[in-house]
Amino acid sequence: MKSITKFFLFMLVLTIATANTNAVSQSGIPGNGLILNDDWASFPQSQVWENQLQADIVSGPVFVGSRVVVALENSQVNAFSIYSGKLAWSYKLDQKPNQITSSNDSVFVKTARQVTSIGDGGQKNWIFQTEANITTDLAILGNMLFFGCTDGNFYCVDVKSGKKIWLSAFKSIPNIGPKMLGEDHLFFASTDKKLYCLNTSSGKQEWELALDDSPEWIFADQNRVLAQEGKYLFAIEASSGNPRWKYETGTGSLQAVSSKGKFFVTTPALAINCFDANFFGKACCISTGKRLWLSQLDSFPTARLFCSEETIFVPKGNLIEKISAVDGSEQGDIFFGKKIESISLQGDSIAITSGNTISLYSKVPKKITFEVGQKTLGRDSFTVDMGVAPVIVGGRSFLPARYICEPFGGSVSWDQGSKKTTCQLNGKTLSLWVGKNTARTSGGEKRIDNDTKIAPFIQNGRVMIPVRFMAESLGLKTSYEDKKIIIDNERGQK
Image 1 (cartoon, rainbow, N blue to C red):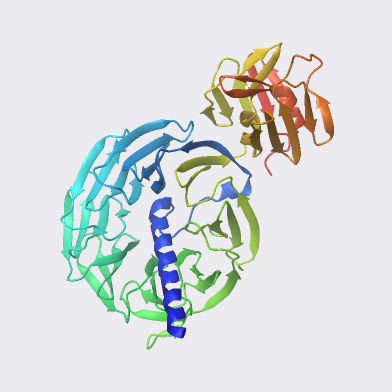
Image 2: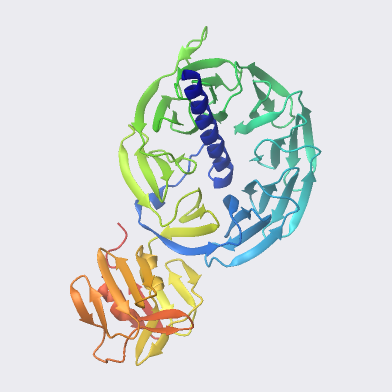
């Protein structure tokens, strides 16, 4: 019975570790998980746009300039404008993609035996063809792209030209990594139960370390390489390959991020362990790693962890839990409308994928603007295409409810049977019916307008709602300036 339990536990660790390793490549978040700016986490978020695609998303999202790019199960690579959500370009691959990454103005897509470079306009830059299947993730450092294959070949390719810079041949198969540390060192694990360090410029081997078993994942930062092998977590000196400390995790561990001299490592036991990354141990032997704190989770992360200097961000379902990097205490949650399977950040823009859906979120704006006859929504520093323009009926302006409510973090639902629209925002609920001059608010029934003809109506399949009545019923402020409609978020950004 014990052996069966141990086997299933091992499979659980391996499955989750593999899933999270893939998430590293998909997310567009730096390899050590450290983001430079976490100001976005201090403000409420709201959905800017959402697209349902013709196939499931298998990799991405990644940002390239003003585009966010995903790879689909049907071998398409699609790029969308971060401002409008409109399709900027689409590229059809010869093979099914399994990883996408980006650098400067190009996207790099890995398939079974190809790496394809696609430019910002959707044009093919180059295709690098391999003789054997690619077995590692793609990794980029400056103008160099790295990956390994089943024939034991490890490649370095020029990101601009697609030409081979160097090739290192091994008798075993590179299968975990690669990870970089600084500009000179590259690390990967192989099927011969060894960890290798190569010089990034030449491809020459600097050291190798034989392990008792194949590592489940590796991570490089703080002059250390972390490797999870069985029930032990090893910290290996990056310059020499010497193990400096190990820690018995018992149930294994799944992934790591680092910040300010600390490693944060998740385990299948629903915990985050914080280790002292600056602890070397004794030179003569392997010491026991210094765990600084443990924080318990209530569910498994659904995407790769990332962190700032002060906070660890744990994607779980439709929210991100914030945990203090100082002591592991809970710091609250950031809620989103969709399950987070992969996430990427660029400035205030947050791209989330789930199944065949990609959504873009940003800070709740201080105000939004519309213009009669124009199909765009002004949202602080950029505009979003609505596909519908405000209309004037009986001297009143009308718009679909979602464009008034959702930018400020609210929600809108529709009941087809009763032709009812329900909006929730600022702790208030508003229900309106097509053709009905009265609405139901949190305070009871309320007439929409003294003119009984003013009521929600359907136009081209969209339910049009009186703008001023809806906005002010939800605690917003409405003003007009020439042909512009301005809605202020009176509660402001918290």
